Length: 605
Image 1 (cartoon, helix red, strand yellow):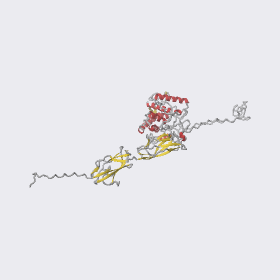
Image 2 (image 1 turned 90 degrees about the vertical axis):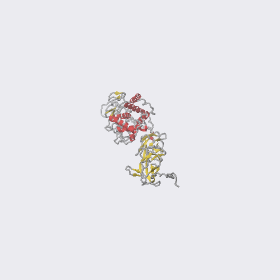
Image 3 (image 1 turned 30 degrees about the vertical axis):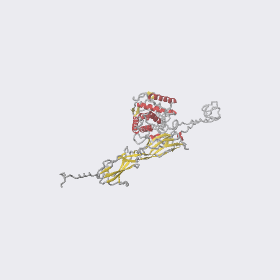
Image 4 (image 1 turned 135 degrees about the horizontal axis):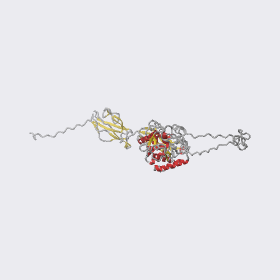
């Protein structure tokens, strides 16, 4: 990501100091509060300690562009005027059309996928500018894929982080060390889980600006962060590249783009000119970078001996002959032989002490219980893993990555399928709570060490169907009907599980022969199917969000008697309802009057 990719920038340390001071000054003038938060102990080049429960590893803390936004409004048309940070011939606030579309599409997608994140596309634009100069000024094809791969320097520990190869060179072409890749500069190990398909072509390509922008959005929205809150915004940016200077710079570019921007044609944008590492640039070639080699200095020829001059030449009278007094024929010191000169031995750099991550040999389970939950519920048990050395000693402050795999829609709290947690003083990392989806069955959670191929540990988790343990009628009215008629009311029941509402629980209703014989009756009450035909078993029933299940209307044939309706649910809840079919009682005849007096009022004698 140099001014022109492949060209090395060689600037003195003073340049870095001036740039850092300029960033701080601009932060104060353009983004109030941007740099006012303390972010922990500083490391080299202004790096800050990572926020809790974050990777700090989207880019492997690779170098980035340090060009500052112009002080003038981003609204004017393209200009070649120079701003305070050097020449600004990059169409001012203009962003290449395809790149801008990718940022806005990612923001729109995240409104649905991560509605509580509140990610603005201007944040993606700021990071895209700082990481790759908006994909080298919009050097992308019609589908958003960069015309040439954008690669960071190999992370071999020589001035950068040490990250051994994790992708076999599949993305960066380097089978020895990882390199940041694409317009948003993901390292392969992060892309492996953070990658997204942003353009719907069925692939997750870090070199495609739509895929990379959507992946960056999801990366910034993980851990339940709300980017409308300053603290969460700062944590998210620092997790992308763990540097206070980086945070200040991204905040300033985001504020700049918020003031207004416009679309420019693809390929017409410029490339920034200054980088956080002042003496190296990113290679334009898709091949990995290699250390520069030089030819060894030629070994000097052996000086001549007395009486054996070199090539004939004019005698200078000092005992040497040929090619001058101190030439190959003599040493200019009376012809005495001197030993071969030896090049100085370069100093051996001290071996850095191993990091905590380097000490980890394997991971062990730290007492995780059985992982099972009903669909839609949270798992009560949380995964706990411990990092250990080869001899079983716990290792603290090591980042462990928990990854959900398998055909499941289960997630961690916050909706993510990947979570990274640092081990505590006892070497133990506790994963966020698992949340079951609607898909039942088993899935796997793999725990690995971030940045080291140590032996991990796998966990199997199970999602069972939603269940109820109790069913009860919502009405106590007896269910009666005359032969050939229909029951006046519908049967409604409520399902609960451990005393709480059991929603979306599968149920079956069957008109059975007797309390002891659960086979389907062939006479008596019945339901009707879509064609009006009698049906005495209903399947695919389900309680609603209040745990209620209302059955269709019941009808009676000509058979009188007492019949049973049995309702069962997943989980074993059973309710038997009594149905009576009997002729309606006829009205009672009026009783005769007592002795009727004669018309004359007296009896004849």
